[in-house]
Image 1 (cartoon, protein in one colour):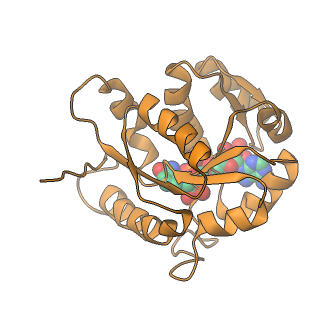
Image 2 (cartoon, rainbow, N blue to C red):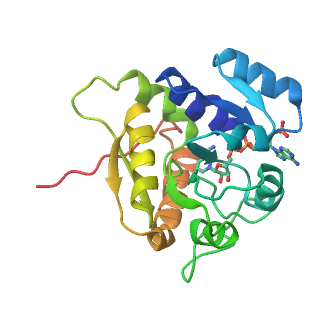
Length: 204
Ligand SMILES: NC(=O)c1ccc[n+]([C@@H]2O[C@H](COP(=O)([O-])OP(=O)(O)OC[C@H]3O[C@@H](n4cnc5c(N)ncnc54)[C@H](OP(=O)(O)O)[C@@H]3O)[C@@H](O)[C@H]2O)c1
């Protein structure tokens, strides 16, 4: 799990009553602190994954091979990824148009059930969304995947984090949601409003 996403997204999920294990950091001290602050557990990727109903993957694209190797067998697991397939200096998508990070991930773990979710909002907004979860109108959150049961797991997590899940279809739709995330990042980090930003789809 990534630090920014661990500190915010996973904490929101923990607050919603899920049993969470924080994992993957060079600093064990930091990991322990994150887990303690969130009243969660911490452990190796293998420990975090082995009895989990869902594995939330939020590491840099270049770390995917390493974290998968450390996690071990993910057969049958719902793997919810927000990892964007960014190049080393985080300036461009390294995979786009003819594939997506989510699809490339699924090819690496063909026995796991991959869903793309949580990546289309900045981590800075997770706490705000969670705090306002009882309001009638929630921000939307896009997700996509090919496995029905894994998508149900993602929907529960998305709702518990305070969002309104928006099913975008099969996993290949990550080819569109990942560039959409680049737009969200532009608004969040380059424009004036700041990163506590979410979106909501309305149908008329
Ligand atoms: N943050 C967002 O708003 C956002 C939005 C959309 C998508 N995402 C995606 O989520 C993923 C994580 O983003 P983030 O912002 O949470 O990143 P981050 O804060 O940089 O987190 C990266 C994590 O990986 C760990 N790490 C890095 N190198 C490692 C290594 N060699 N061995 C073990 N652990 C290592 C870091 O821990 P240490 O530093 O302690 O090693 C840290 O916990 C990325 O793929 C990003 O594209 C993030």
